Amino acid sequence: MDASAQDASTIRIVLADDHAVVRRGLQLLLEAEEGFEVVASVGDVEATVRTTRGHKPDVLVLDLNMPGGSSLDAIPDILEASPATKITVLTMQNEPAFARRALGAGALAYVLKEAADDELVTAVRRAAAGETYLNPQLGARMAAEPAQPTGPPDDLSPREVEVLRLIALGHTNAEIAEQLYLSIRTVESHRAHIQQKLRRSSRADLVRYALDHGLVEL
Image 1 (spheres, rainbow, N blue to C red):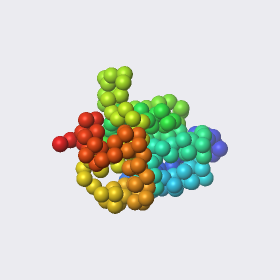
Image 2 (cartoon, rainbow, N blue to C red; image 1 turned 60 degrees about the vertical axis):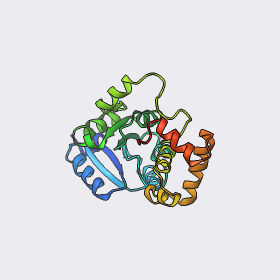
Image 3 (cartoon, rainbow, N blue to C red; image 1 turned 90 degrees about the vertical axis):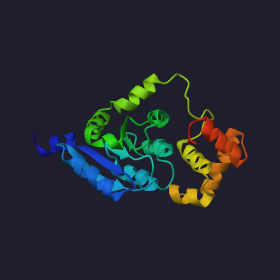
C-alpha cells in the first residue's frame, strides 16, 4: 500500500475531555490500534468547536461534562463547523435521557467511560464508517423503558438538570458555578430558565420536583 492510500485509510481523531490524564490514556488506547491517529486533544467546549473546525477530524471523541458550557448543546455547533466529523460521546452519564439527547443531536456513538477499554475502539470505527454504536447495557435500559420518558417532562436541558440537582442538594449559586465551571451569572440564568419551564419559583418547589422525578434521593 502506498503512502497516499495509507493516509486515506487513517481515521483522524480529536479528543475532548477536561482531564489531561484521561486524554493521554485515551490517546494511548486509540493509537495502539492500526489506522488511528489522534491529531489534537482539548479540554473545554469552546476549544472543541474551534479545534474541530480547524482539523476537520473523521471522529470527535466528546466528553459531556467540560468547562465552557454544555457539550451536548454544542453538538449542532460542532457539526456545523465540520459536517463530515462523526461524534462519539464518551461519558460517565449512564442515564438513557442523555443518550437519547446526544444521538438526537447528531452523535453516532455513545460509550460509557467505565467500558471505554472494551468499547471505544469499536465505537470509533463504527462512527467513522457512519454507523451507530450504543453501550449494550444502556441500550437495553432504553429499550425497556416505556415510550414516554420517565425523566423531566418540561424540556429541561442536560445542563439545567445538573443545575437543578445541585439546587435540590442545597448548593448556592456560587457553589454550583464552581462545580460546573460556569460563571455565577450563567448559573443564575439557568436557574431562571428552570423556574420558568417548571413554573416553580421557590427552592422548596424545585426540591420537590427533583425528588418526584428521581433527580435526587432523600
